[in-house]
Amino acid sequence: MDISDFTSMCPWSEEVNCAITVCDAEGVILYMNKRARETFASHGDLIGKNLFPCHSEQSQEKIRHMLATGESNAYTISKNGQRKVIYQTPWRRDGKIDGMVEFSMVVPEDMPHYIR
Figure 1 (cartoon, rainbow, N blue to C red):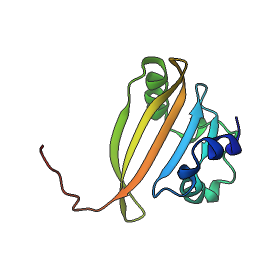
Figure 2 (tube, one colour):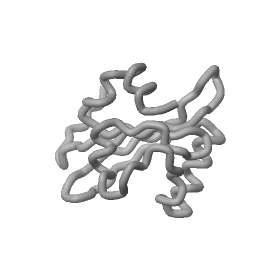
Figure 3 (cartoon, rainbow, N blue to C red):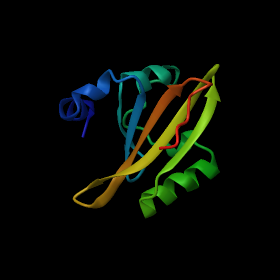
């Protein structure tokens, strides 16, 4: 699969207002939307590269756990003066975990929280 496969299947993903990165079950990056490519432009073209060397041992363990169990992971970070929500979840093909997708969204510091 290459970037044209993802952009043809999900054309909206290229210009949505969040960063989307998709990897396969071995951690090889298959797709990064425009926002993700801009975010990591200083690291060069990461598509086709393995994401494990870019992460700490603790993060690598978390990714491997998600790929093995199908569990999702969510957290917030502050980076470059922005607060972001990171949501990582395995994706499946024919019911089998085939990789992981990460959504990174900028959120306001005073984001409201509602109980419904």
